[in-house]
Amino acid sequence: MLVSDAMSTVVLTIGPAHTLRQAAALMSARRVGAAVVLDPDDYGLGILTERDVLNSVGAGQSPDRETAEGHTTTDVVFAAPEWTLEEAAQAMTHGGFRHLIVLEHGEPVGVVSVRDIIRCWAPAKMAAAPAP
Image 1 (tube, rainbow, N blue to C red):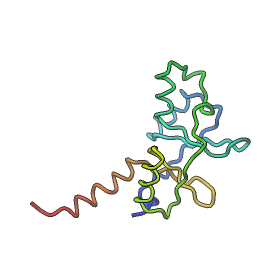
Image 2: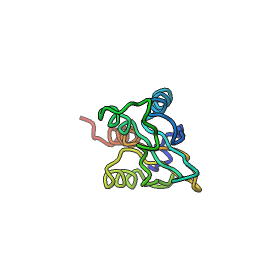
Image 3: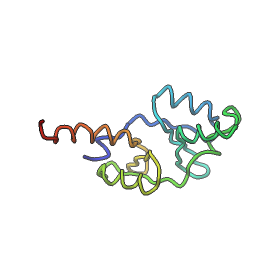
Image 4: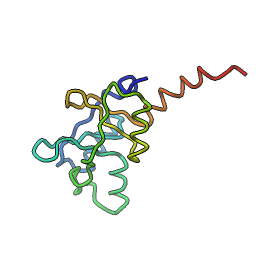
């Protein structure tokens, strides 16, 4: 099974000046756990995850004053749609993260998460299990 089979094609893109509250509201409304942060003037593509927001709030920072720019991961590992789910899972395990931005021709076309991979693998494992 490929990343293109599992990825969410709902790509939430925000700018670096979005506050963490704005980012959290958009992620919640779209029911996604990560936003692609696009800053064409500086670092290009990054990712802001629900964990980044949680860590900031947990540290006592104001979600109304903190911006995505200060909490975005810019050293991002990108996946390709033709990667296998095994390759994506290995990249996530090796890097210690739960989301990969999927790029095609240099453009974000999706996000694949650990949950997406599990959702694909679980039915396949159940179908392959011997009957009791």
